[in-house]
Amino acid sequence: MAQKTNNTEALQKLTARLVATHPVGRKLMLIGGFRYRFLNNSVRTSDDIDYHWSGEFEQKQADLVSFLNRVVVPEARRLMDYDGAASPHHGPDAESPAIRIIDLAFWRTGVADSRIEIPIEITRIMCADAVNIRTVEGTIYSTASDADMIESKVLAVLNRTVLRHRDLVDLFLFRDQLRPDSRQRIAAKMQASGINSDQALKRLNDLHAHVDYHGRATQAVIDSQIDSPAAAQLNDAGGGKFVMASVLGLLDEIIEVRDENV
Image 1 (tube, helix red, strand yellow):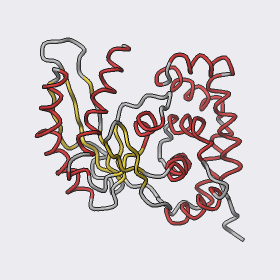
Image 2 (image 1 turned 135 degrees about the vertical axis):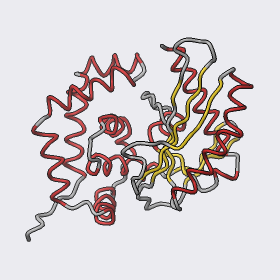
Image 3 (image 1 turned 135 degrees about the horizontal axis):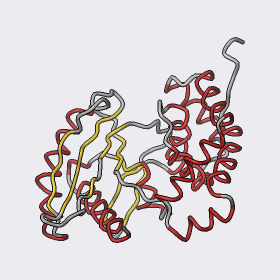
Image 4 (image 1 turned 90 degrees about the vertical axis):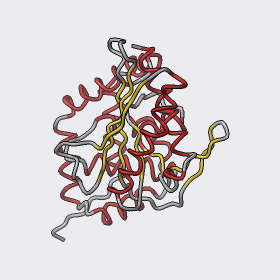
């Protein structure tokens, strides 16, 4: 299992590096869990690669699919002995106006259980800051600022139809990247995103009312996506229940909720 995780991360890094050094990657901003893992040394693993894109989604998806098949897949074969293929994602979420997904997969022909799937998501987050530039081994990566990243996690907790508990774990891990004015920034982003106080309050109330369920779901993220030494430390402190209590306190403090009827 550890070897497959290592191979997944090696293929993610190869893909991200090639995208970053090709014209197709210009103005694509690396975000999400892999960004935290790759650029911030997060203890949480991530299976996908997320990009912020301010332009038209469908053409960028087509351009990336072509690039992945022409450039990334042959490089994965040459460097790591993996075959692969990329294609536009098809399914209920394929036509969402907020996201486009590419199904990228790698495998070793004739080797059982060698398939590695790395979905690539093209989406859009609210950015109050200018693009941030980070470098790794001489390669330039465009990304969102640390503040925009962690604030996007708050918005994701409020706005996702189905809560992803990995967002809560990321909030716990990177809460120190919130700014003194993040409460005001998040309020402005909520308004721009159409997230009203009723919606925010409904999600906060659900987290409080079903804290045991959310604690168990957060524990599942710790068990499956957190590096073993860090997971052991979190479990010593209370695991998913401890993370939930910490994040709930943060959300209650950072989210500005007004009575819509006043």
